[in-house]
Length: 483
Image (tube, rainbow, N blue to C red; front, side, top):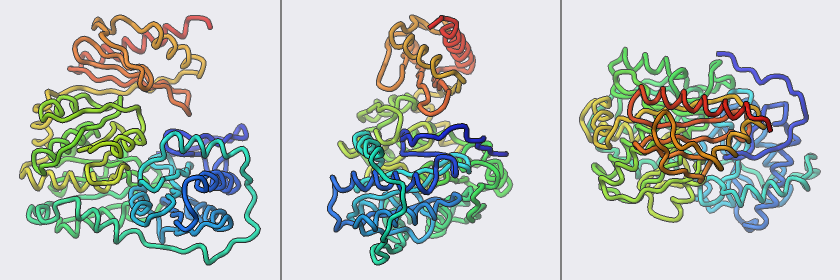
């Protein structure tokens, strides 16, 4: 797969999205802009923390990510902050855990997560070890206008040091999973690092738990083998083949910064994040005796609602973005929180998504159930009243067209879609249509691309096709209406 960024056609502005600022390396993601953003973050830090608390910096395996981290460290040190940089590329959940564990003033993480190789990004993680909430990122954005992009005149080198976050994080993870139960199961596991930060973490935990492990792509490649660091079907072809050919019990992967998971069952099926959330929610209650609420985003399966009802658990729906899930985790006891895009966390863990933990919990499920993963999927799906069928349409629309569509659906939502009555309209994030038969449709415009995302969940493949076709038609009818 080839990945191209395209030629720059403008001087891009720094824009913070749902999880920090991302841009194309050497276009808008440059050393001067990194200095500018770092100073904006530092100005926020001065309002929230004292300078006797260190600022941590982590980075993923991307081109120049380690160098961007050093530039940020110089800026922070010149402003009087003590800085600790991870001694190698680092998973986001690991630097997040360290932010809390080391009583820091938070952490800067240089990553573009699952985005293609030409991208890099920076996000600020507060000391509570979860994504920054909107009021924090809004304050940082407000500081940008007064921030300089010049290099600092004087950098006190004694303010900057390296640290190894791995040992403390691994001990924490060993306390969350049932190591002895996994050891007793003697499972065969195949793991594809996808050239990501999880190498040396997932494989180390698997070996600690006595699994028969083979690992792939466990080295840094800034081009991610010509693909994307996203643990989805087309990137997991080699892992699927390795699982099937070796007779493994499960295949594991993570995205570039290890906050998202990828799971392959023993038959070579790549499980959806919705399915993984369902399996782990039941496992934590049924096998581990845990309790708490289930938290999902508006785009995540309602089978979780059915499971929550069955086990007498609270269910909360949040806007899209793990920062909202994490915020709920800091407010109440949450059994599991997650999103359909592949992130989750559990009770007792930090309020940040963690692909390393998710991978190991799925291994733990098999150890407890003593059944093939494909059979566990069938049983849990049936128990939750499934299967339900999900789809996401990415419709390429101009920004004026997106705005017209959202205005129409907000103010004049359809009374029916594909012959099914609309019984309720939700406006928590985008527009969500709740249909009479239990199906739902969510419209969310992308904030950074000319895309309208349409998520849907329904009871049959046939109905899925009918609803998708009906929504496509409804949306393109709006385009014909003059502004």
